[in-house]
Amino acid sequence: MAREDGRRRDRLRPVTLERGFLENHPASVLVTAGKTRVLCAATAGRRVPSFLRDTGTGWVTAEYSLLPASTASRRPRERRGIGGRTAEIQRFIGRVLRAVVDREALGARTITLDCDVLEADGGTRTAALTGAWVALSDCVAKLEADGAVSGEVVREPVAAVSAGVLEGKPILDLSYVEDCAASVDMNVAMTASGEFVEIQGTAEGETFGRDELDEMLRLAGRGIRKLIDLQREALGR
Image (cartoon, rainbow, N blue to C red; front, side, top):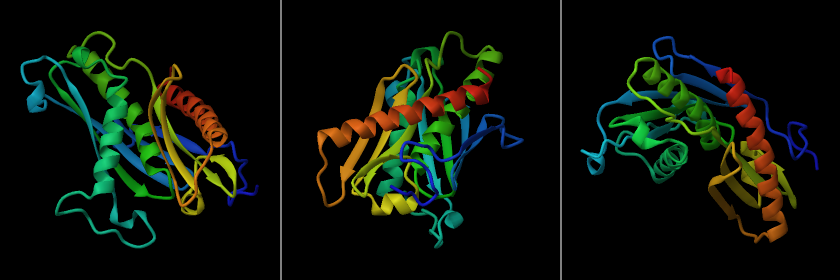
């Protein structure tokens, strides 16, 4: 099948991870996946959620937003509380990152990942997660350098990518146009050791079979391995 940008169905869009994008905030990463661009920044604070008080255990959470000019038509800012989609994406990013963090080693502090979409062309949540892990790693490295934490806080890399079924064929890393036309849309988060953290998948008006599911997971696994290679390369590991 022919894709709008000429990619094979098993190929990622071009991906870059630019560390230290904000001069005043070193634990920041600009992640670019095709035309999608997300700025991710990690900040450590001494407060923890109330249910973790006096436990000595830390927390990792995320905030996500689509900037008004990130889409073709202006999106109003969510000034009166975040919408359901935003809340769901924030929880997704936080859940996945917590899966690879030793929260006891982190200690009684919270690391917040701010993920702001500068330009949206599909795959914003997966790009945000992939960039957020790099920002998280830089934030933890600063804590380690300052002697604030010891031990292995971040256990291993984690990344995410979309997969779907378009014109009857499973494909990897959907752009916005492909996402709108796809009969199945899936987001997959996986660790460097090949373990799944989260799989989100749904059909749009049609069902899909086990063979298609297996192929989407295979494509996602291949894409995530490439993304983790890029994360490690960005960090010089």
